[in-house]
Length: 94
View (tube, rainbow, N blue to C red):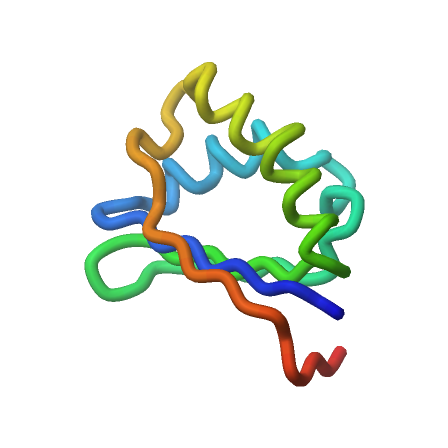
């Protein structure tokens, strides 16, 4: 079952997003297992929505790439962890 993640970065900016995404996503597409990605300005900051093929796929990306890279610090990137909401998808349409 597909697994969705919503990250909201209060006070986040497009520039911080661009720096952060450049450090954790491959240049030619999405990380292994991620099937959807959308991001943009939202009330009070920046929001990212990602859908992975499974919860396991999300956890592998989070634990193997995202968290280690963010803990190292990303020049110009987000400076604090996001507010996170996760959910198993009931309906996913391409």
